[in-house]
Image (cartoon, rainbow, N blue to C red; front, side):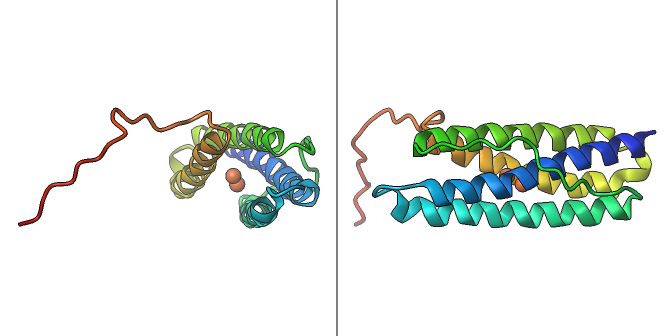
Length: 153
Ligand SMILES: [Fe+2]
Ligand SMILES: [Fe+2]
């Protein structure tokens, strides 16, 4: 039962990773203006990472006796880079929730899958933190604008 729930959640994660490959690629095609100079490659790098995650998931699902889905989740697009980043943040958050559900579905027999999922979860959390910074949802707060360095004698 736990194994079935684990595979179901891994398949949900796979469908979100497939959506991420397409969505990040689409954003890399659509981005225009001076932001293109930076974001075309940035979006393509994210698409490649999602592709790596999708491949790992497909292999893992088969190893656990399941059939990998070929259906991507919902894809969002925009011509505004700030909107694209918000769309990507939402997708990454959805993926994190599904990886967490897969982790929670692991029982004692599935400890190795649990450890593997912890690495995936750490990766997705880093993606979320980066996107929260890029959308300015997460900002650093400094108490003082001035940094006084100690004198070296
Ligand atoms: Fe991912
Ligand atoms: Fe991600």
